[in-house]
Each structure stands twice: as structure tokens, then as C-alpha cells.
Image 1 (cartoon, rainbow, N blue to C red):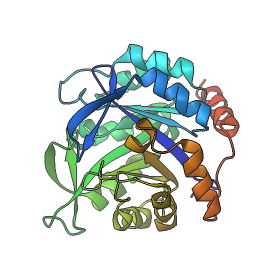
Image 2 (tube, rainbow, N blue to C red):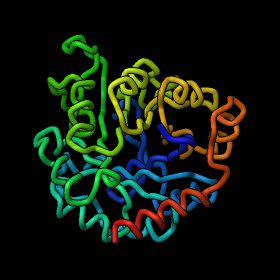
Image 3 (cartoon, rainbow, N blue to C red):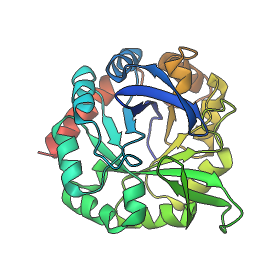
Image 4 (cartoon, one colour):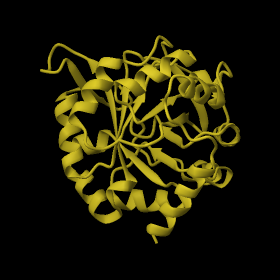
Length: 271
């Protein structure tokens, strides 16, 4: 879809701190979100994704102050998700510095939310986040979950992705719960299947453990690759990943300048 693959560090935030676990469980503290966002921006990240992983479970809004402080430190697109239930929630997040908004559980509970956000703010603002696990209960073998992976639905992941795009989702953030935090590589089958049903960019998430894992995800159909623990632990830098992608023939952005320009353009078009 996109000409250049994006590399996106993900900040899973709970109680104002970045956390990470395995298969969405046993979360451990990984640092301050503002400091980590600034570090990844300096390393050349193309975007930052900020997910308040307990907002939906706790039935509260995303922590706006942390989003505001994070946005002040980075000058590349910032996607924020967690606890988004209405167009007003989107408006508030955009006002404190978010560029794109991720929705998941609330959209599954009320699919019309996707239409409302896309109609009011534009498809370019809306990222559908899918927390997907393998299951024999659906035709594709993949099912969508909610509440940070805690609740399994009856929705076939591919059917839901297709419907969301038709309703106006501008991107699909596809996270494999089975691969999440394992560092054994992205679920390439899931990425390829999502690519087949999606007419919008697909972001691969879940399972990155070494630089060799990223290019296969792109070749399977991902337009962007997202990772968390390998960056938070210092095992890999954004530069390491970009160098490996380039060596494998994947086109990348050489610095954050293009991403920063994209953010300025996006904000100008949003008025």
C-alpha cells in the first residue's frame, strides 16, 4: 500500500507507565512513556503508538495528561487508543496532541462508532485495532478479542476487518495475541490474510524478537511494523530495524523528517 514501510514503537501504558507482558499477561514496568517516546523519536521512529491498555477494562477515559506530554516531545504522528467510546473522546484526544485514534472494544460493541468517527474526522484519523487469536470457532481460524485480549468474541477476524474498512477505518493495527511478547516472530499467516481483505494499510504487531523478523512481515503484506518489548529493553533500536529492512530490499524512510512533515500536513488538513 504505502511506498515506504513505517517502523512504529508501541507504548502500552497502564497507570501512567509503559508496561509489557507475554500474551497480554504478567505486565511489568518498562519505563516512562514520555521519555521513551522522545528516545524513539531521536532514533528515527516514523510514528509512535500509545495504547492505554487498562482504560477499557477500568471503564475510564485515556489518560489525557500523559498523551499531551508525549505529544509535546515527539514531532511525528502519534496514534492513541484505549477507552475511546465516542466522537467526543476522539475530539478530546486530537485536542491534546494525538494525530490518529485507535478503537477496538467500543467499535465491536457498537460498529456504528467507526462510521461516526470516519464521517466526523475522516478515515485518515481512524485506526482499527484488532487483538486477534487463533481459534477453531471461526471460518478463518482467527477470532477477535476485546478488553485487552481478556474477552473472546464470536467475530471472525477477517470478516470484522473487512466490515471495518467498509465502514471507514483508515488503517488496521493487527496484533497477534498468540505471538505477543514471545519474540518468536510475527504471525505471517495472519498478516497475509489481512492483506488480502484490506484495501487500507495493515500494521503488523506482536512477536518481534530480532531484526530478522521484520522484513518477512513486510513481504507478507504489512505496510508498517510495530514492536514494543525489543525497543523498551534496549535489545534493538529503531535504527537497527530500519537497517535490516533496507538490507532486505524494503524501502524505508531514512529519518524522522518525512514523518514530521506528514504530521504537519495532517494537522493542517484537519484544520
